[in-house]
Amino acid sequence: MVALEVLQIAAGSMDNFAYLVSCSQTRKALVVDPSLAPQAVLDAARAQQLTIVGLLNTHGHPDHIAGNAEILAAGDVVHWGHPADLPDADRQLLDGTEVPVGAGCVRVLHTPGHSPGSVVLQTGAGLITGDTLFVGRCGRADLVGSDVDLLYDSLQCLKQLDEKLRVYPGHDYGVRPVSTIGDELRENPFFNAPDRASFIRLRMG
Image (cartoon, rainbow, N blue to C red):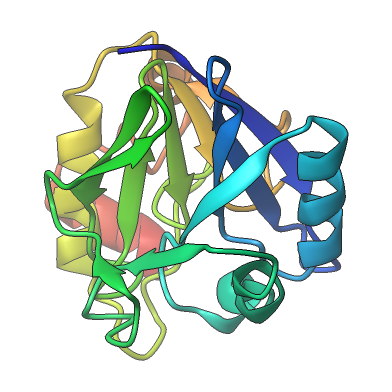
């Protein structure tokens, strides 16, 4: 299994990040959350000589899926999404699903809380965390479909992962655009809240 490359792309006026996850051997790529700047994603893929074979959404909120149509129209692209958020996707992103890309694959972790169908995507050495985990923060839990208890549980699962994993968030809300699980354990007050009650007070306060 080859290591996958992750390219982070600024994606619009809401500080979104889009991602290209690619196989260096085959030059095949997945787009993650084209958000508000699908043309920037297509331009980056063209510059890197990548063939887009799939589109994955970390969740179904409008700022993350706004550019889906442009990506899907760009070629023979399969759309993947969790059915709780994106029931019309071609294929389902369920916990444990492995999405192939060239000689590698992306593994899915279902992380509900910000939305029912939120997922985190493990690319090998990296995690594309959508709006579940940001650098120094975490996703909102006061939106329609959000559940603060589920968000807490999802973050506890992420805390068990290798501290060296790089964190690629869904928005540029932190002091830097990329972090690690270890850094978030040390620096993120939401991620290192000592218990559920403390987390709920912090997140909903």
